[in-house]
Amino acid sequence: MGNKKELSPEQYKELIKALKTRFEKNRNRHIDLEWLNVQAKLEVNSEKLWSLYEMEATGGEPDVVGYDEKTGEYLFYDCSAESPKGRRSVCYDREALNARKENKPKNSAVDMATEMGIAILTEEEYRELQQLGNFDMKSSSWVKTPAAIRKLGGAVFCDYRYGTVFLYHNGAESYYAARGFRGSLRV
Image (cartoon, rainbow, N blue to C red):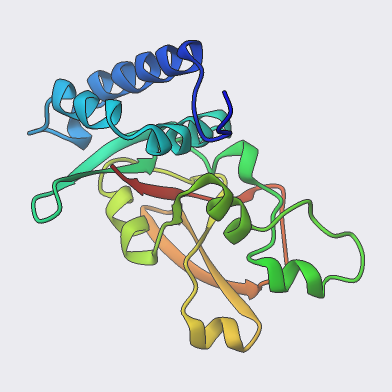
């Protein structure tokens, strides 16, 4: 494997099996879609497969949540019950990480998402996800922060409590053991 963004045959087999099992178990997330079509699209997108593998490896439990008729792309979101464990205790972005003088987290949400080849969910996407189930009932997830808020030093995150999605703010340099981020990927 010369290219770091390529899966070994074993990793590929393991990932496809996990994705197919999750797809079949959660039909409510993609009622009109067929697994064979999704798999065919995955088989010709090795870099996207690598990103899905990273989502899986960090506890995101990625699943198909839609299909974009205009682009012909399947949309995957992290569908783990709580914010992915392998992506918690991170501040919002590199600027926030660099601003911390002590007790720095190991990484930032934006940097991790970029390294993984995924996008951080927007507030709108986060709310769409909550239509498919109840997520982040004990944790919270950074969401893409509007530039105007970020310019002032803030960042936003969401969670689901009392049957409602809440959007909050925090300093972008903050990080908590129960806050991570959820990603999306188009394949």
